[in-house]
Picture 1: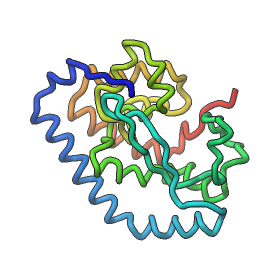
Picture 2: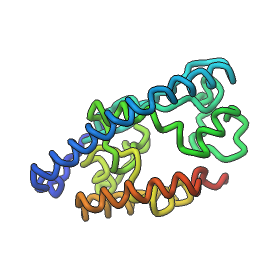
Picture 3: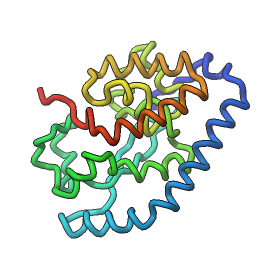
Length: 206
């Protein structure tokens, strides 16, 4: 586990943290209730389209580096992660038909509302890194671990997967250093536009 606690985040007023957590809890609860019929429908579609489980879970680095399991709808063939190719591209043959639809509209991320509900993630924050990525962080990059990872974040609304990894980290650190509830609200609004535009769903295949 990569442990890290940033003093600057620790100096954020407690009421702001409480508001952020309250917003996470309320919106994730509402989303899980309202989207339950869709979750059931997508679960059935995934099962009919390909062999395997409905959900995909993967261990990621959370707040202060604590590992947790992040949930998604399964969009690839069963056990696709054994290929060790984490940079998925648009023509990746491992992606199923239903999976392509889910990815194009970012619907595969819906199960992460459960992670937010449990307090493992936030609606807004740096996207959770894989454990091997977090283990390789520099002292500056470790600042990403000083907040809960998010479903969306500054890096996502700026460029999403079209950005390089160093560019994403730089924007995530900027988000932490300039944190405000207003910024969170604006990122959530921009995320809606990003999903509708379907920009940056895939990175470039090297």
